[in-house]
Image 1 (tube, rainbow, N blue to C red):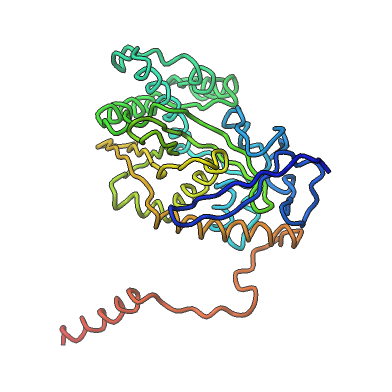
Image 2: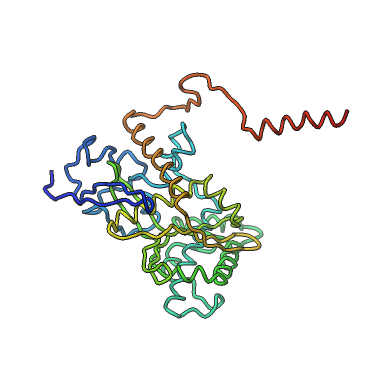
Length: 357
């Protein structure tokens, strides 16, 4: 067992809620199940890379998005999958095949980051004169030409094989990203805040669980009153307040906001953390943009969801092997009922019959 001293830090989920937690800068010799030590081994989580790739916790890790996903630890996406798929928990280990919207969103973030850097160093003139084949975009994104006629499919497959591991977008998707960037340029709220640090990976230990988070952006400037403020880029088909609020809850963005806020607070325990921000860009006409932030109610919702996800992980770890098939009524036959709006809709149908007579 290491003789390094543990360091007490504070989690602040909101202005009034303070939770004591212990972090150890040296986890060598940890055993399972004792207070202040790991209750879940990192190897239990999906991935292939060792959580103990750093020598102290909490810590910032410099790695790519692909490398981040390989690290074995509890993440927001892992916890969200446990909640959404309960009791079909195996899906949390299955991995997610990137969809076209996901690929577009990941590529758009890299283009937005480069644009932000050019604006910050005052080298930006206009989008048409931007050199996009540099830095992270050159390394991680390629635009696939549009082939037609004989051999088109063969050319496409050869292109994919030559660029394996990169984000492959079509020419149409590139044009979509340019429209999104034009929209972002028209929104001064973006550029008042998007001048900080991009893609920060944080590893920490919380309540006996190895944790990880990859924050899209951290702002600290005069606009945020020099307070570190976490944020995430969201690309979506419809980004107006009503539509985004529904997606925020249904897709557990509230849990993401809390998880990322906790990550930043773990790294900077003596500093105040600003309200979590979503930078929203629409992927279709009218290509709207918005900057939304999470209030304390949203963070409290995220805290509750995350607490449930962590407890589920602990229960599954103690249980051992996962069931081969999900049982949706594990204790007894499940009684079904209806929401008020559903039964009211049925009763209105009956009332309509009376008006016809």
